[in-house]
Length: 376
Image (cartoon, rainbow, N blue to C red):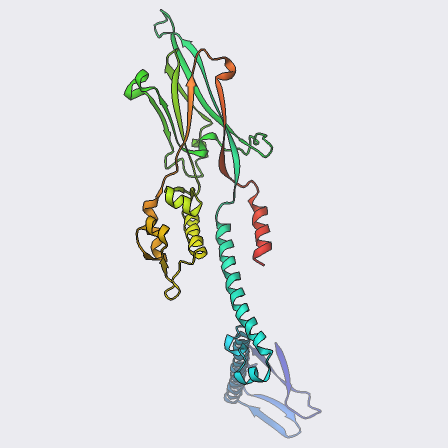
């Protein structure tokens, strides 16, 4: 920016042009400049101009330091006002003696601290819940069917070979019993970790009486949905009645565990995830006041906990390790099916409903609802 500075009196018509760049004074010419004024002829040398520039630069630097100090002091004061200490809120004993109603104010301070702690804990619980996939209970309808047929021999001569075929399929039901949309439905095998079909060992021998499917580590990932199956089929030779046992192990996400009978009866939980089991243990401890009043990290076991954990006293941090021996894999679903050639067609298909956990079809709505209710 160019600024014109008069050097003469009121009637002077001569000016020195100077340029200010970032607070520094830069003379327009390095040679001697002259001006006409009432006092006569004056000369400004280059050294004098540099001296003036240094003075102005020093003034600007001092002003900047002063402003920065004011800004820093204001920010520090605002931070202290924002985070007001509890000691500033507590009334002195003299004030409490003069104002008997001040005890109600002190009670409100205690209640405020408890309320803040509860809100902070609830926020953490809700945030942890939102990290998990939102799921709901749905019904998976199983269809187990069989039929008999005859295949021609490879040589093309002679009688055909009688065989039977067993099929296990299923569909996920919507609310009201309707089938799920084909575009959004999950494949049948995605609901299971293991499927075992056990046939009569006396008929098919020790090497051919089992048909098994186990989920591999590659198919357990969400990106490998193409590896999932729409159903399972088993074919064996035979034309008589065959007894078979079908064992289905559900694919729990997250993983669930089965509790021992004593612990399950005590907590009222049969199968659950590890965090849910630990939470159930903690709720039992709180409801029965088993936490040590002096040493809060210790749990004084009652007679039921002593029978289960086999110690009279334990730390709360030891509970996850002590639960290791009390948890096991959930029991499979067992279905007994009879493959009978003499049965009519309508009895060759059996139907079963099992309860499964599926990801909520519209999790965004649920998340936004929870956020609006609890996080604001």
